Length: 133
Length: 417
Image (cartoon, rainbow over all chains, first blue to last red; front, side):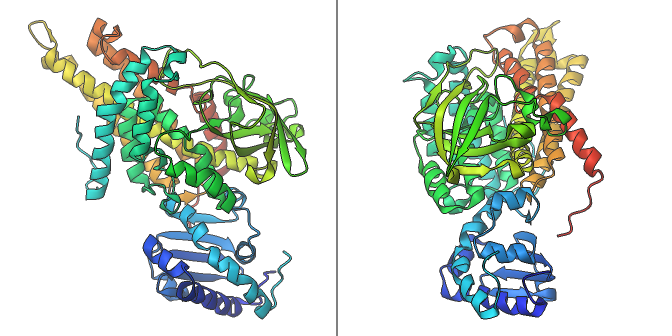
């Protein structure tokens, strides 16, 4: 069972998190400069989310976009990633995270996301998500 | 020599990148490679050797960091652009191509972690380096273990009878490393850093291995002598010895829990490089032979005017074009998905190195006795090409590994995302 109560909760949380990252941290400018857009295909809860410098889009709006990089993982891996508890090489090797797009761009995304990792504990408190995973 | 590219979609940037690589390959890399080929293995790496001039110029032009993301100071090239550059470098010298590529292996694997300390310690200084003074190696091969270190489809790979020559004792937050790597470690005697494979849990055989990155100036590290060999003499190779070398766990890239899939990921990348350099090598054989056959007169007319010679030249050409299609296709796939479909990298390496070797073998037949002399580049290319059938996993072992993957996965399902 996923740490996220349901799809709507996850969409609300990540919609807010990504918007905040883009508008209130250096992430937005760095994402724009990099020219990278990302499609997240998340399982359990099933979410499709597209992110570029303009903010996040979900479901059909997201599916209509052509991203530079697509990343697929389950909801618990997403949660652990934002808590800095995912060993990336291990997750890639064990297929916990699958990626499509130029490897150099995939490798570039990981450090870009750090501001989100700093913000995420606040969201865990707000949505009562476990942090000792 | 320029070539017609069947890919009609190359951008101006792609073409500019290829032109820059070609100029470097022709003006700097090939001449230095020929010079190094005539030297002893010790002389190749001695102070004042042209090898260091090559490295300095390569680093100044950022050829050392083309596999690394822009974010860290690398070039962030697309898979196609990487191929365009590597084909040119492989044309100039297979050995120096290997030397330059393994220089980035520790940084390449370190940046997969996105760990800030690893990035600051290993990745950024490497990308910023402009004089070749920071250079890595891929230390996997061992005196008692050649290609079997990658034979993950074989039962013996998981047997406790497979005792590595490099053992790790885990103590607290450290790995303590003892043993040695073989004389076939590319860059082994002169590298400043290593991507190091070593055995952590011998009860699991080589599946109990792990990988770390480390600087090679740590106490307890020593080197062997540069290896003398028939081909790729411009490529430094030699042993690295470890005597109670303490490595912090934070430098560990993979532990035994996920060593096998991690090994496959690294092998997939390395084999793609081999395949693209082999394309350049195959092309060198074609170009040398086409030029020679227009100049060399036999039976009262240039060789190329003989019917059988046209046929031979065409076969050289078709192998080059096939190499390019195969290696680009595999690179475009596996540098665009993570984790990679390893069998396509193995396909490219085996196919392209075999065709490159065949091309040079056939080219020598075209050249006749002149192809055997040191007066011309062909005999060096032949010696270099022979080594490619063995390095980065001999082709027989790679084929068995590929067959194992096919048995497990074929046909692959389409990527669903």
